[in-house]
Length: 111
Length: 113
Image (cartoon, rainbow over all chains, first blue to last red; front, side):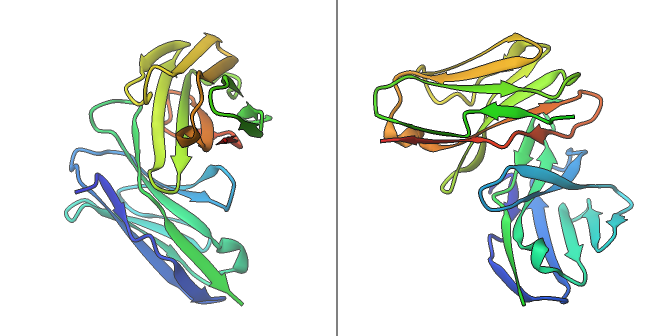
């Protein structure tokens, strides 16, 4: 089993729709969780950290479910500019520096 | 803040040649990471430096790869000799240790023919 698993997609979604991704992680001791966004031929950029209580940033909402070991990302009122690959990232429990990267979920927003 | 700066942005070379990739981390960050990204394997950590000292190089694929960080504002990743299977995008990222968030450079797209 991979340490961080994501559905690779692509998710083809009409503009204005709501879309959600999940990501599962294998180690229950992990403490830090992130969503990064990577545009085509660009570098990964932090979208948001994921807190135990869940957090929201505009149209984006992230949730953590420790019992089931998954994190989710919800995008409301999707825009064409949301088209990207979304990377789920979990800290390496055995070190204070390692991040374990999911392979990413590709999202395509269609007009 | 200029962010993490990598050079060159693109490199095309022939098999057997030496390739040197460069990275300037964000000023004040004390951790630096080199990653390689391919379609097949995703994002892989190659090496991690903390306060200019290599801490974990277990991801370096083989002896052909080497990395240095002579000071807090500069790091290099060298491949000698290069092979076609080294073709990938190489990212450098830096971090301030009090927060576990990595900031990436724009990457170097390497093609070895």
